[in-house]
Image (cartoon, rainbow, N blue to C red; front, side, top):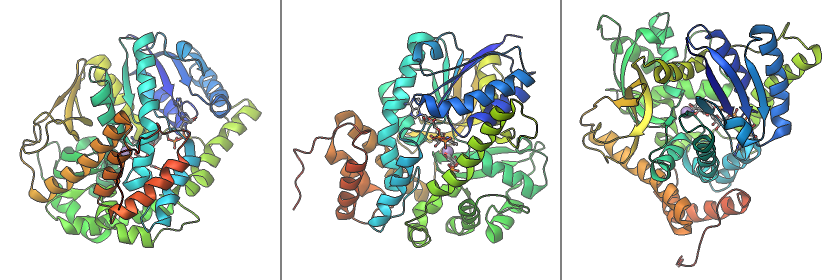
Length: 445
Ligand code: NAD
Ligand code: G6P
Ligand code: MN
């Protein structure tokens, strides 16, 4: 079997060790020649890289390994770029979450004003990775899960339409794992799903087992009472709240099963009231996942061994291997991807980046037709996709006005006045990351 070379961009990510361990678990179906880590923060990446080097030495000494901040070394001679960068890191995520709270609006990594701010930072970073890939390995594919995926995907559609980039999100997979537990199935792969929406903004309409039996009634019964909470739930406090809140999200449209992120659009007042302006998810992640991952890597380095390490395979990231295998071996796997609509949802903007099932093979994804969607979803999606398009338009044209419109249009922001106040604070906080916006034609009365 051919062996593949991979670069993980955002090598210093908290998710890198789990993904590396997951890749090593899957070598029999996805053999690796060379594994490289690339980051623009050498110090952050080095802890993760040193630990990964020891992991590889123990588990797969045949794989060549390199960690670098040099784009040429990183992107030369690779088949896949697995991208999960966070431009501005947790320090900026914390501001994305805390600035809107000062103005009475919740702050979140990918939704509402926080997601818009992160989008304005991410676009340039992700485009840079695509350009490195195309310069040094023109035949490679990028599997991108850098957030905010909806905005990043729209930017790639606008600015790199011919690039081999696949945008993907793990939230439906996380929820489907929970559904499988609720149903008593061994794996989410025993379910065949129909789903549509935007990234972090979608609905399941049909879920069946391999024999075609409808699994939706049993799931609805559970979600109506418990959301996506499962027995022995070990999620962080904020995620537990989100999984439970799915029952209120579900209540709004009992014909479908919702993505958890819809809570930010249907219950923004609830989310705001339950936010602590001094301690947001960024703080929870910095004290939790980041401390844990970097601490465990440090221990591996000190011991020069993984013995006793609590780092574990990120099973739920196996969708990344599935996607790479679909391209590499033409598996024709059915997967949810963020792709240009092009008529798949027949009564929706053909240029919208939508999240729908696709069949993936060597030549990329083929969309599965969804047909017409109901007025409720269509209305919500038109508003949200317009926000995402306006953010990208603002980034391209450096327009203050467009970004103000994007914030005002977001269902999560109550007025143009509040949108402007948030925007002005975000501009100040993001001055090292956002393009400079032109304000000349703004008229404020
Ligand atoms: P993290 O801050 O731990 O890691 C991100 C890394 O990216 C850092 O080491 C940082 O130095 C690096 N980086 C930032 N800008 C860069 C650039 N321009 N070039 C190269 N490297 C750069 O963050 P994390 O919490 O581990 O998350 C990583 C990313 O994965 C985030 O964007 C997160 O939202 C995303 N993510 C997406 C999904 C999904 O469903 N699509 C799931 C999980 C995580
Ligand atoms: C889910 C989403 C990702 C998001 C992550 C946030 O997996 O699909 O897009 O980045 O949650 O997780 P965090 O633990 O960083 O808040
Ligand atoms: Mn996601």
